[in-house]
Structures are given as structure tokens and as C-alpha cells.
Length: 221
Image (tube, rainbow, N blue to C red; front, side, top):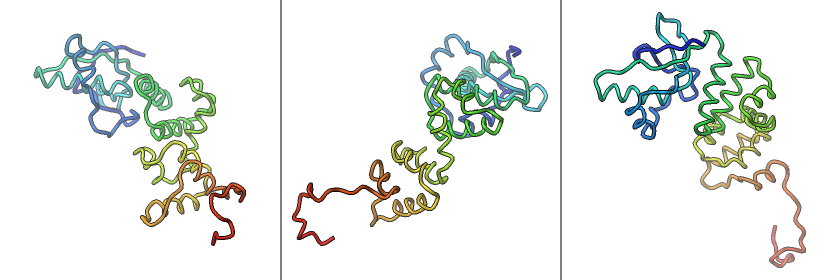
């Protein structure tokens, strides 16, 4: 990689950055340091096809902190950047996820989006696991989110569905997922979750009448 100092107005957020398109990040924790010492860790950037302009693959928060400081002072200093070779999307995606995992684990749906794109770039499950220091099983579980209907994935991203429930839903057929969503949408119905969802999906489990807490001969069901 080539190292260079690049003016703020020659930088923009890459679509390959995991958090591209989302609202501006919270920079309150790093702004005092940037205000006192500037940006010390280089941003990871790549050419974006325009002369002397680059897109940020990793370092979005540092970029926003520098912009905030430039707004305060009326001018901004060029930022230290490591310039990647153009055309290596897989490496760019990995770099973005590595940085975010080192700071704060992103939600699993974001990981799935990135891992899926890496698979399309030719990376294998062991490749991805080795890159991010996680097990093959963890990678497979994240990739399994691709078996979910988009509405379920988005509900999981919004933390409306817990991890145990979503794990069971990855094993459900599309028809079962649609039926489960219909139960969720009906205020008069109960949508099973957790271990109850597993029983609902796979036929339940017989319970001996010996442990009943009521009189069996009076039970109408």
C-alpha cells in the first residue's frame, strides 16, 4: 500500500464500507483525541475512478471526527491514508469488517451481508474463519441467515427476534417462515419462539400423562 495525506474534500465513504449509508456515527469518544492530536491511524482508502479522489473502506469514524473538527476551525488538515490497489473488492470488504470487529462487533446480519459478498468473490468458509479469527461453525451459522426471508432478517437486525429463535428459523422452510410471520402479524395468535419454536417446526414432543397437573378424565382436548 502507498501512504499519503489526502485532503478531506477528496474523500468519501465507499459503498464497500459496512456502515455506508447509515446515519453519521457517534464520535464523542474519539473527538477529544482527534482535536488534541489529529488523526493518527491512517484511513484505508482506494481510488474511486475520479482524478485524485478516494473512497474510504475503513476509518469512517475518524473521517467524521476530522470533518467535525474542520467545521469547528473553518479548515481541515489532510488525513493520513493507506491507499489500496484498485479492484480488490474482497480485501476491501475484509478490511472493513476487521476494523469494525476490532472496535465493536456489528450485528450478525451485517456480517452475513459481508461474508456473502466474500463468498461471491471466491472466499471459502475456512478462508473467512481464518481471516477473522472465528470458527468455521460460526461462519456457517452467519451464512445460514441467507436462508431466512428478508422480513425475518430485518426483524433480527432490529433486535425484534432473539438469537435462539432466529437459529431455529434458519432451519425452517420458506413456507414455515411465512406461516410464522403470519402468526407474528396476527394480534390474536401466538408466534412460538425459542425452544417452543423448535417444537412447532419439528412436530413437538410427547408429554406423559403421568406428569399432568389436572384430572386427565376431565380434560376435553
